[in-house]
Image 1 (cartoon, one colour):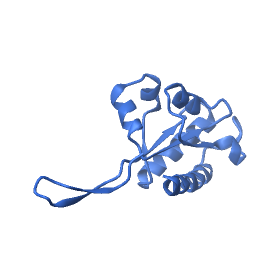
Image 2 (spheres, helix red, strand yellow; image 1 turned 30 degrees about the horizontal axis):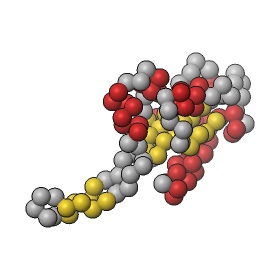
Image 3 (cartoon, one colour; image 1 turned 45 degrees about the vertical axis):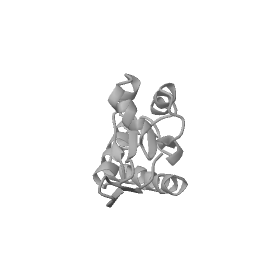
Image 4 (cartoon, helix red, strand yellow; image 1 turned 90 degrees about the horizontal axis):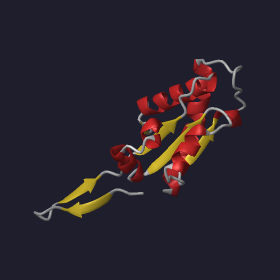
Length: 138
C-alpha cells in the first residue's frame, strides 16, 4: 500500500506524487444480487470513490491487472450471495488484505430482493463506510 509522498526530481524540485487508487472488485453474477453488486460498484466508480476493476482478470491472472491490484492503496470486494465468489477469486490469486462487503449481510436475499435504485443505494452507502475505514487504516 502506498501513500502520497514528496520526491525531488533531477532538478531538485519536489512533486506531490499521487497515491495508488482504491480498487473495487464486484460479483457480477447472474442472480439479482450479482446485478445489484455490479451496479453499486459502477456507481462507486462514477462517484470517484474507487476504480471498478476486472475480477475476471484476477481469475485469469492477467499480468497487468495483477500488478495494478498489487499496487492498489486499498481493495474493496463486493459479493452478492453467500457463495463469496469474488472473495474466493481474490484469495485464490493471493490477495488477502481487502475490505469485504456481502449483500446478504445487508439483509438482501437471492431471488427476492428487487434490483432497483434503493437496493443499489443501500450497497453504495455500506461500501462508502468500508472505503472510509480502509482509508483510515491504510
